[in-house]
Amino acid sequence: MTPAARIAAAIGVLDQILAGAPAEQALLRWSRASRFAGSGDRAALRDLVFGALRRRDSLAALGGGLSGRGLMVGHAHQAGLPLDAIFTGEGHAPAPLTPQEAAPQAADPLPDDLPDWLRPDWHRALGAQADAVAQAMTDRAPVWLRVNLAQHDPAAVAEALAAEGIATQPAPDLPSALRVVSGDRLVARSACYRDGLVELQDLSPQRACARLPLAPGMRVLDYCAGGGGKALALAARQPDMKVAAHDVTPARMADLPARAGRAGLSIALQTRPRGPYDLVVADVPCSGSGTWRRTPDAKWRLTRARLDDLVAVQGRILEQAAVLVAPGGSLAYMTCSLLEAENGAQIDGFLAANPGFREGDRQTWTPLDGGDGFFIARLVRS
Ligand SMILES: C[S@@+](CC[C@H](N)C(=O)[O-])C[C@H]1O[C@@H](n2cnc3c(N)ncnc32)[C@H](O)[C@@H]1O
Image (spheres, rainbow, N blue to C red):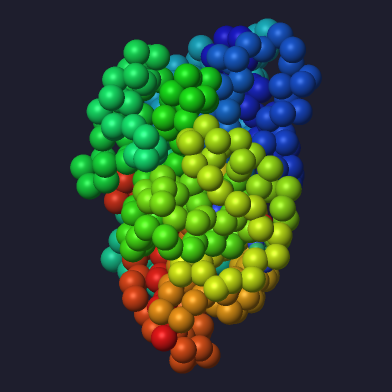
């Protein structure tokens, strides 16, 4: 496909998303209907669509309207693309620009690419960093790997990755974390990934897991395990523990035994955990506002009602998980959100209602720290 044809395809896919279709679904529908497209075309289209969604409102302002075409015209202006060569109307290229599209009168400053209803919450949570974090959310997220330190040395793993065409850089503060600087699309097919040397895991959840005090013999439960990212990270840090994983939807843990097997770790699946555990991790469902670089359509789909529902679910999970914690043990609450309602306010509410717990630790990371937005609070049971 020509660059112009890719832009025309992005216009169609974006129109579907703006009409309510989830981004992944709209991209899949396009792929199925476009058998002529190669993997390079699909990757380029995905980049165009996700890039436009991250900067939806600023591109709409630059491109003359909130439509697939407006976003792609805005993108062409912002990226300095040769407009006359793209908007030709010939073959599969999009129609020529109108005079208004060719000379946009965009607002200065451009919109901050936050949903209007959320802006006050965002600023309350992030204070002086609010604008910089909103700006950071408009960029592509870096890819981070977690080296399985239980079995491998990070420098040797970095060399093995490089031999497969994947260049990495170590995180300055965390031995397990490697940032992929080129070859990110090769990771999932690499031998290093297949053989359990590395897992795909963002820097911030790695940092959160690294903060938790672990010791041999500890009983650990990942209460909202999903694919098991936190259980695997903890087990790799201290293989001499009994690590169990639970999820209200056990099917979400389907890949966990294979992932644990690849990493040479043992994680027991628990449908009805009874406790007590020395550490219970509650990586709760959340708005994902810290990961909007990766799922930018979620930023525009979130509503106040949905956020309120999530906050209520998180509160209930905290209460359920708390009863599984042994005296002297810890409850580690995690979200990939930056919003106060899901983070600090949730923890303050829990502590006020549960005097048997005290706060041990609380930390928020934002994209300005190198990874996704992420929150952890460790609560210690008396
Ligand atoms: C943020 S995801 C977990 C991601 C996972 N920890 C990881 O690192 O890959 C939240 C998970 O919580 C689960 N969940 C939702 N409500 C729950 C509940 N009441 N009890 C336990 N798990 C729940 C969901 O099924 C989902 O898999």
